[in-house]
Length: 332
Image (cartoon, rainbow, N blue to C red):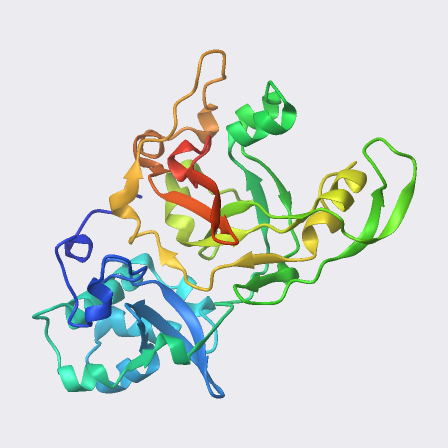
């Protein structure tokens, strides 16, 4: 499924919400990500625009949304965004188009009524958008794998996107406190002196998360032709890692060294919002196997990559910089 560029992606489009037009905003009118937020005891879904959150429940009450756009807004207006992920892609796209039209400069709608549905982001608490029922952690950076292997990458990493099943119950939203876990680890590399206590090498990995739609029935795989349509949107991921525990226990792969916490950003950026950043998938180098037939799709190879730079800072210093277009495997 190829998402076409449309008026909502126009880089010249501006919002009458001035904070959405500043060069340093994370939430211009071209973005429009979804989140679950709380003010007081009231939890509901919303969309980011500048330094404001569009309260979808309040917007529905204005009657300015109709048809499938209203259906998608209704699905996102409650105490979880799970119903939104189950909506038809056309309905979610219709909601995006309506929001872009209502909040653009010169757009339609009652300005006074629209101002009444805006919540200052600073006064809202952002929550987990929905409760994940499963969490799979893929390693799709061949460069990272080669550094870890100190040379040649394992053949499996070049033949398929390797992964392990994580703990869905310990996925938390940004801002949730992280407790340094206790566990067993070697006193020194190669040592037989095994100790129990607080993790001595707490680490993190900058990652990119994908929220799936309804998924598939047990035993019924999703083919490459339909894989892109199964992707709803994306978020940032902080993969917390207890390295001492992980290195000691990893006979069967990560367990306690990874499962104590995984942090995700509360905003879900839709795949449609990312359409202008799609590029060709990373090619295969000399001596590397070609993509297997069951994982190969011409459309995926031509636009399955994403040209987005990711960075991480520690105490104000940038320590990580990468780009998603360098991933060895596409999201599909």
